[in-house]
Image (cartoon, rainbow, N blue to C red; front, side):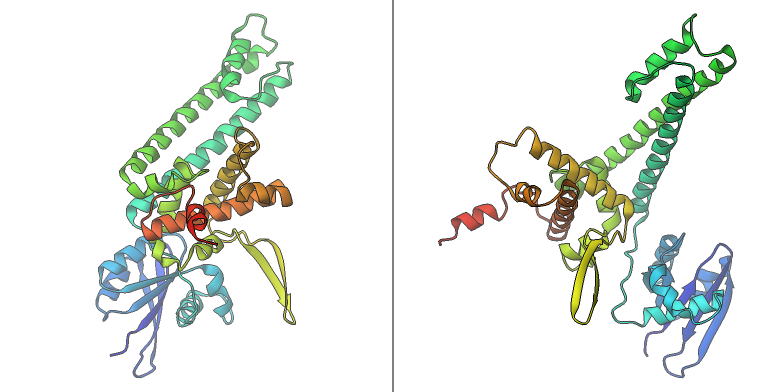
Length: 349
């Protein structure tokens, strides 16, 4: 019996399934309530269930896998071209089914609950940081309106702001002082929450040997290591480190015609958060190369910095870091700073 492919358009309450019987060619379109989805799929023979990689898709993928089916998560941008006419639930389900038939179609890895929880902690931390930054900037602006100049660093800014508000000769009107004190309390509360979230991420990292291994790469720290392991899932799902770097959008976009291909800026596809962490880490590596260790013999990064602007070199270093992360995870290796260099030196000329 040939395996059936099911295109499943998921939503909050109403789901739409599209399938074609491989023997008779009969088209089956089924509208399902949320409570009926798993029961309906459980009654079917093992099949390939394709869904868009959107909100709650990871949850449904894990549940459907438990029923013995294979799951394929497809990025929505690859499904959209197959919607023939008006966008409806039935048309979306058919487009998902059509996209799943393409042999070259790429899929998104299904994450475990633990991996998804770690990424959720990263999302929470990012939101808390944005809220704290907004509160700090507003405090700078409001107190600056009354002639109170605060330092840029928030760690030194908070005590000085509190002193300025508590002073008897404070230039800030009493009408506003109470609310600014509440804002100082809010900033301290947000800082405490960020510290607590980072502590949970750090505790998870200490339990994961793979996180510890890739954290040895220069420029890869707590956030990058945990986000990379949680995002990649199974490293072998990528054929090479270059494919993983392309997945993160760290390779040039291409535009060509008539056999001529022009390389543009980086594609910026894939996970924006992990790409940002890698580029920040690369900037830290460049800062070290330009400072403390500038007198050491030239390295690959030094030669890139001599030929290219700093921003271009940072992306190149981030690309290299992504490939190193994939190599360590896919092959179970440990980071060796001089890997390849000693082998080349030992090879006779």
